[in-house]
View 1 (tube, rainbow, N blue to C red):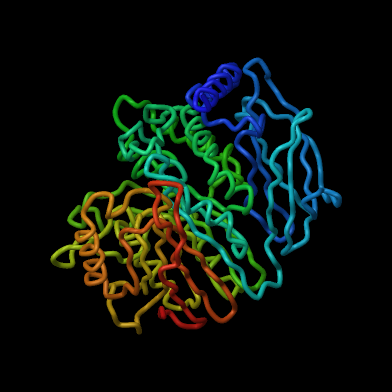
View 2: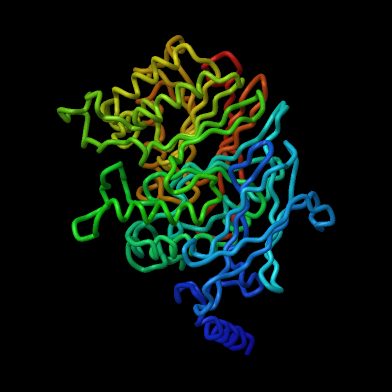
Length: 501
């Protein structure tokens, strides 16, 4: 009887919501208690004096606009409101709302919420960046594929009170059709069913992800800084196309423009669609958080392998001239640490195998002229830390041109963060083979301090004046929601050196 009652309640809810302006396959995902703010709230791109706050309303199809009121307060009960206002949203922004709240105090917590008629959103928590920080903790995440598993790691991030900020390094969504890249056996199914190509498709896929309660909670509890990689558009994207943009799928530039628009609608970024996504955030004199766009801003087409005749050409870039020059200026700043949020491995990174040979052509290794040029620039710099996504493995690296064990030629350190859920070694091979792959990475990359080819998780950087400590954190499983958190390894880089401990 209880099961029949639950089924009736679900069917009634779906029927009642049939006229909502949302893809019908998303109706079972809606939490009626949150209406019309079904997708929760989010904040992002904090500075010492400002932060972006975000929400979205899902209304009846006949409603063409909505007047939303917003409030920011110093307390969760909203007795001390420091900023408020109202704004009308329409279908032009997918009924999403972003407000750049300014005039805030540095280094403190704030609470925010939204009103539509008599409905109130979840209360979000956010934090401005400090001006005089002695330390800060930043979580780095990447590669969250809905069909590959539950977002337990987002829940762990939300629950960790020591995390001040979350940086997402890309592949926030994936573009594939049902079952093309994922395992639907646990019941997590892509919406829409096909590969996403149009603005409506991209909006719907973001809607699916943002209805996930663990991702919703992470956005509610933490400010995010985000950048895209390829799957926000299509696999192995570059400025003029992508490996997964096929003949018959329309004009690439129209598709990429639609993907960009949906991204700016759904993520709490300060930038507009017409502006470059790369940017930086000053954390007092402690650190400069530098966010790159190694995917769309200046990347030329990838080559198949290192034997390609144009492999070494100086015209092949991963950043482009404007972004490269901007990065060099940022590296000359006065902050103690330069933390570079970077989508693809800076490297060098040699594949596992019987002998050392091939490198990863979709990373910086595939653009050796620009990689070598930046390596030489870094020779004279100190306290530069790359944090990288994309690769679905965890690594700690001491970067130099040749990838040697010799510490005297190191130019920077790099931490590669594994995936939130996306497949890594043990989704495709036995446990024994996955462990062998792990050892092969360490053998072929003697500049590598740590490797994990099987875990799904995230990275937390604890940044202080004297050192940066990287904690590699993993969920015990992504195949069910019953998961435990563990920190497997902590790796340290001290100020003034380019060696990992």
